[in-house]
Length: 93
View 1 (tube, rainbow, N blue to C red):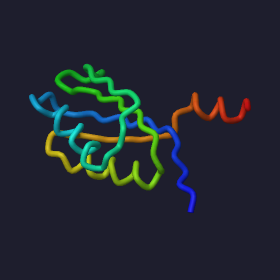
View 2 (view 1 turned 90 degrees about the vertical axis):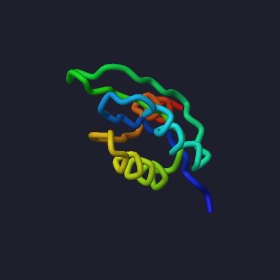
View 3 (view 1 turned 120 degrees about the vertical axis):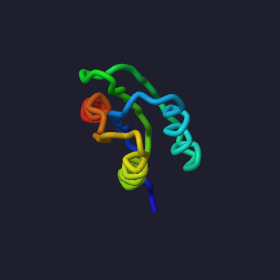
């Protein structure tokens, strides 16, 4: 059975609390998922942080991760989508 690993971008909006980055990182570490890119910064809303995380995984795995991230107390909202740049490269080949 072939696993279809594709690049996904996960965007999470969280309250601004100390230690949240390590809690989010622990979710990926426990599942042994390598993070391609991790960016954190302020969002458009005051006192809300925005995390943009890029990983290469199956869609099923990404769905599980987003559900697990949403269960964190300080996480307000989590979304994921396929990375558009990877799609362009696939079709150009």
